[in-house]
Image (cartoon, rainbow, N blue to C red; front, side, top):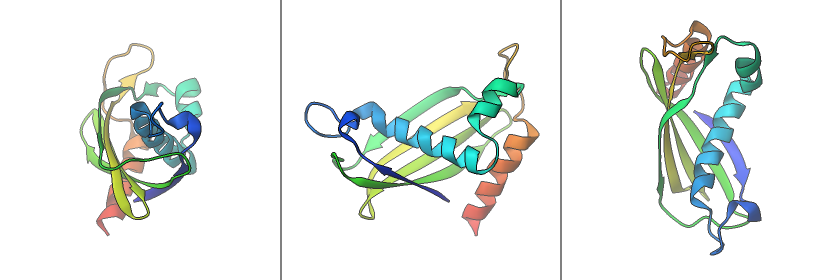
Length: 137
């Protein structure tokens, strides 16, 4: 399980002072991007020089408790499912060890040039599988 730390800033909240609904998804995507970078497969490399892209085809979020400016979050990133051409990443957002939010994001692998879906490329599959194996231990 990969852990990502995030401090909630004023810009992350709405007029009520509570986290803006879309920011929870942003935090999860930041965690995924950091996870990729730490594994030497950064999004910049994928987008600029790779032949594959991983657009989001489904996303959902649940809010369990209020999150406000200054709150320190620990985001637990999980590889929940690996299919033939898609994979699912889930994130649990914790504040003081209490679950305050949950996201699920499904990415599909597609050829960069044609936009057609394809099997997950070997490098990404290896990274995803290694994360699942670590989580199973």
